[in-house]
Length: 108
Length: 118
Image (cartoon, rainbow over the protein chains, first blue to last red):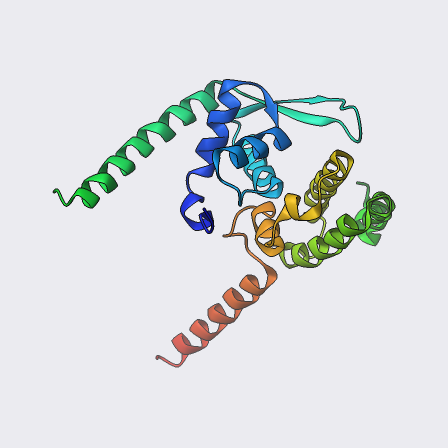
């Protein structure tokens, strides 16, 4: 599906948190995971800026490890603050999606 | 940063040279993207541009990493390099030098109007 960017904006950070929560991982792998999910518009640059933000807000633990080629890679894992943020994200998502579903069904 | 560097900006020149040397090693399309990124990020610089140094370093790091992975530049940055730079510089609310000029102008006009009793 094209042109999801605007709609995804607020939720992508939560998606990235969820991906990191399941296992320690790095930018390229996160981007691929999102692409596989069907978010084909998401590029590595987008994920990179989200990861910077997560790091700045102290939600992730970062480890630098040498990679086979090129400069060392940064691996990300959630810390306690990150797990809390992720729980908050899902609670908000639950709220928004249930309201929007309701609207669609014509209820009040 | 010592006093001499603060005054002359010699540390900046040195860092820029180091950046350019790293950029030289990138494949052509990544290098072209680097030129564009520099152009877009310039808007978010402070007076000396010193605040941009860590941001440029990170962006160059991303280009190096992705080039080593063999990713094409489109896979890395998509179509929206300006948007990428805005996000890099700290979100879309990041203040550019134009914003600062605008604020200054507004402030001056408001002051003048007040004096006239308007």
